[in-house]
Length: 145
Image (cartoon, rainbow, N blue to C red; front, side):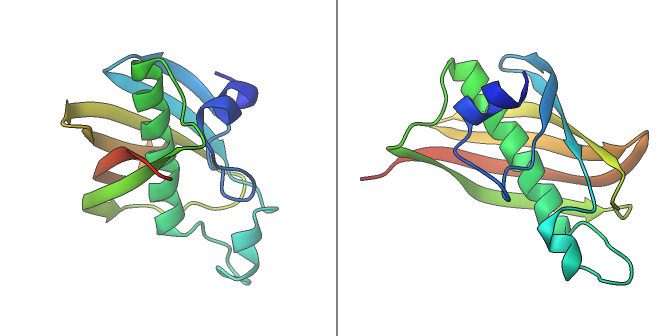
């Protein structure tokens, strides 16, 4: 799934779209996506000026956007203007490695369950073979007026 397809599925836009490409997707099971981390990211100006590091919350957000792509691909649709994809919970988040400009962040998400419109995912992001972050994510899609 290239960036054009991702833009059809997710409502996020620059500077908050944090998925560049989907490498693999198995509906209702798992997804692997890619985030190219560049020095041009706006958050690097302040986090941190002398040693740029991608904020952990943005790594979690990239994983949540990847999870949303898996949920939408499983449902066969994308988000529309009347719905929003929300975090419901984040459990067990662990940060193991700093992510710096020039890194490629591989976003691996597995669907654990979908019950009552609440999705639960096991997620991890890697740089090469090194684990950068892992967490269990819970998300839902809600209609808004």
